[in-house]
Image (cartoon, rainbow, N blue to C red):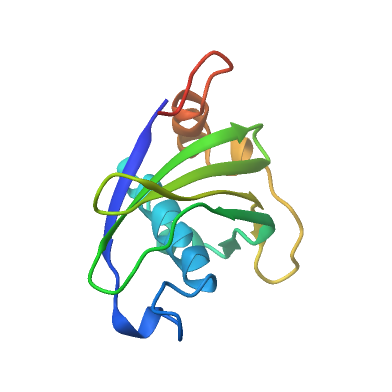
Length: 145
């Protein structure tokens, strides 16, 4: 299983009145993690979009464990939790700069034609992506940490 890592410095604008990262920013960071794992596998989401294919979020979940604050470094770990040729589920863990788990999350996606929103088979349209995702996905016996 491939686990991608992306670091983000917490910016002041990402914090709320309590001085902690506003919850919606974690969803943006999950997107950074997805983009990073795609790059790590040798592909480009931007190129897929240029091909008329997009990957909307079907479901997203986040569980907050510890706050992150302005000036800290957030480390986003991303992996492919499940993949079946059509749908992809990503897993996320976001750590503070002391290595403490701050957020866990997951998101589910499907690839669709941009103009019609009709689902496509990744396996058929992008056989290289399919092979890479199938090899990189989490296996039943694998643990994350």
